[in-house]
Length: 178
Ligand SMILES: CC(C)(COP(=O)(O)OP(=O)(O)OC[C@H]1O[C@@H](n2cnc3c(N)ncnc32)[C@H](O)[C@@H]1OP(=O)(O)O)[C@@H](O)C(=O)NCCC(=O)NCCS
Image (cartoon, rainbow, N blue to C red; front, side, top):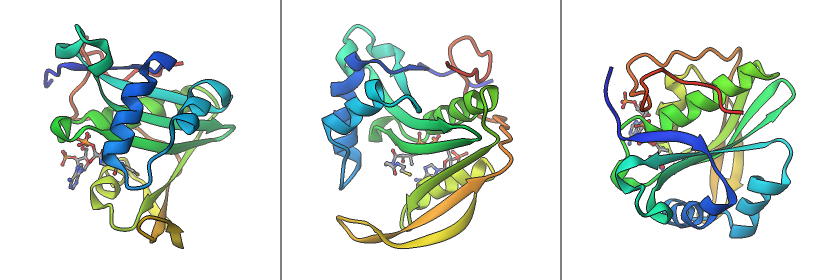
């Protein structure tokens, strides 16, 4: 298996500033600190994962290189927000975050996963297609700044095949995180 120098863990409020910095760098209409804080501490459906770069653990505030916010709502996993810093892309971090979320969903009550993505965001759509997500609908002019259609994607049932992906430190594969 491919070695990697990052781990997936649960986000805490201490992660907030670094998550916000990545959010603002990656999106033209970023979530605000308040929105992120609500997901981290005030939303009973929300789960928040971060990818931590092990080479940077001496400076904790700069150790987070990606994150995924998702909800588990009864039978459904809803992928809400995902980003990886530019210098750490193409290493399987997003795939690992999504895989961990889907595994966690399965280990709880979920059997289906859904998300929305900008129509122009081919990188994200390829990532989700790799898990078996397919397009189910278009929501015209859903996004602002710039205005753009949303592509709705769904995976039903959830099946996770992490083959070929880097795995985390113990090379034990993807584990659900509670
Ligand atoms: C989309 C994003 C999260 C991908 O992160 P990443 O860690 O680089 O993705 P991974 O390395 O896990 O890639 C997994 C798969 O996704 C697809 N993918 C990722 N980046 C891609 C790109 N630039 N072009 C085409 N496919 C891409 C590939 O299928 C890839 O598998 P492969 O490496 O075997 O070809 C990252 O580019 C990002 O943060 N973009 C800005 C924010 C964003 O668009 N978030 C998603 C909102 S829905």
